[in-house]
Amino acid sequence: MVPPKSYHLCMSEISELNFRAAVAADIPAIVALVESAYRGDSGRRGWTTESDLLDGQRTDAAGVAALLGQPQGKILLAERSGELLASCHVERRGDLGYFGMFAVDPLRQRDGIGKAVLVEAERIARDHWGCRAMHMTVIVQRAELIAFYERRGYCRTGEFQPFPYGDARFGIPRRDDLRFEVLRKEFA
Image 1 (spheres, rainbow, N blue to C red):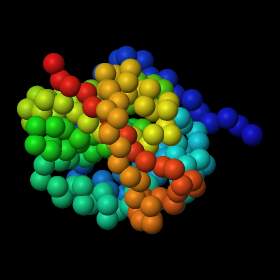
Image 2: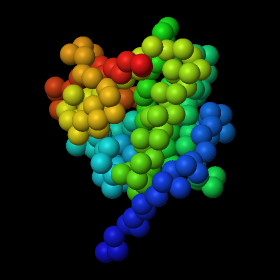
Image 3: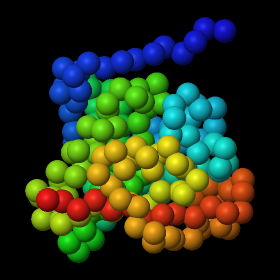
Image 4: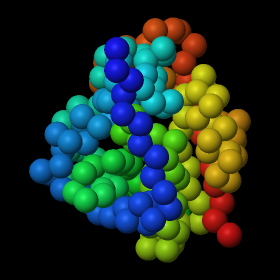
């Protein structure tokens, strides 16, 4: 078996990332990226997989289209040389920004792309929308992902939200104790 090709971007390649807001024509590529990062065997190539926690889909075309239709939000794409490397949903909710549906190509994870996308999403929320903080929800069983966000200034709030059991649009749980914790980062 041939190991998957490994990519490691240098700082100049990170600086060459092009950020843009997604449009309807991007929906199939966004769905494919998100699914590859979170579900099935492809997700296991990266470290963000939820494959041990959830089966089924992570999102679908209708869900992405609904996010694109939100007047207070956008799906941010990170590309290099026209290749989609990462995406996230960022939304203004009053004076708070919300960060979600974050995905990086599993073969490109650990290369700094995710950090760059998070910084850009924070810049949009802070500088363009005047938000005072960014928040997100993370499945509590994802300790390594929570630690990633903590290293970037996010704090655990102790506020929890239930997992939407019974709604296959969000995946099919493999365990009965899933829930989300709200993480928050205040902007200085």
